[in-house]
Length: 284
Picture 1 (cartoon, rainbow, N blue to C red):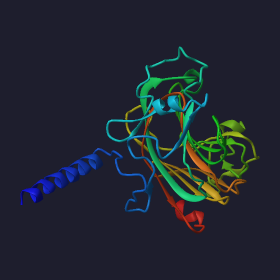
Picture 2 (cartoon, rainbow, N blue to C red):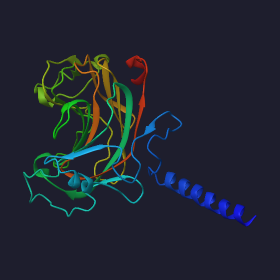
Picture 3 (cartoon, rainbow, N blue to C red):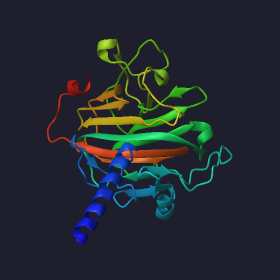
Picture 4 (cartoon, rainbow, N blue to C red):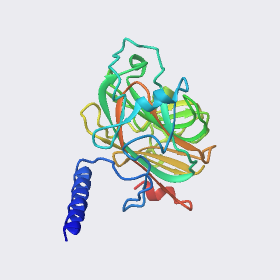
C-alpha cells in the first residue's frame, strides 16, 4: 500500500508538472511525440541531439552554446552570450543554423518565435533577423533553398516575417502591381488583383497587412505548408501572407537560423502528407 501511494504521488507530480508546462506554452514533450492534430514534435526542450547544428566557422561546440534550452522548454538562442549591441557590426561568427536530419517534401511545419532584447553580428544592417529555410539542397551558412523570413525592421516599424528569400530556386509569385520597384512589391493573390512577376532571387515581401508581434514579448505563430514542387504557403498568426507555386525544388532538409538578435523558438513540429492536397484547402 505504501509503495502504491509513493507511485501515485510520483505520477501525480508528473501530471501536475505536465499541465503546468502546457499552461505556460512550453515544449517539454519527447522528440517524436504526436499531438492531437497529428504533428510530430522535433525539439525535446533540452538539447540539440535531434538536429544537425553548425556555425559559419563549422564550430559545433559554438553552435551548442548558441542553441540552448530556455527555462520553460523553449529554445533560447544566444541565452548565455553578452549583448553586443551594434558595436560588432559586420562580424558573423555566430551566424548559425540547426537542420533536420531528414529531407521532407510534403508537409506542414509549425513553430513559434518571439524576440529578446540582445543584438549581435550585423544587426545594424538587418535589424531583428532570423528565419527558416526549406527545400534546402546545399547545407551551409547560408544555405541554398527557400527561406521563410523571420525579421522585424524596428527603424521603419516594418514586418518582414513571412517574406520569401530566394536562394537558388525558381518559382512563380504574384504581387501588387501598384508598386513599381520589384523589390518593394508585396504578395497579393490573383483573386485580389495580384500579377505574376518575373523570376528573380532575393526578397519577395509578404502581404502588407500581415499580422505580427514585434517587440512586445508576444509569441508569433508561423506555418509553412509545402507540397513538393507544386506550391508553398507562408502563414503568420493564422493568416496566409505569401504563396509561391511551380517550384523548381521538391524536397530538402529544413533549418532555422540564429543571425542578428536574441530569439526564442518553441513548439517546433511537422506533419507530413502522403499525397498532394489541393492548395485551396489551406487558403481559407
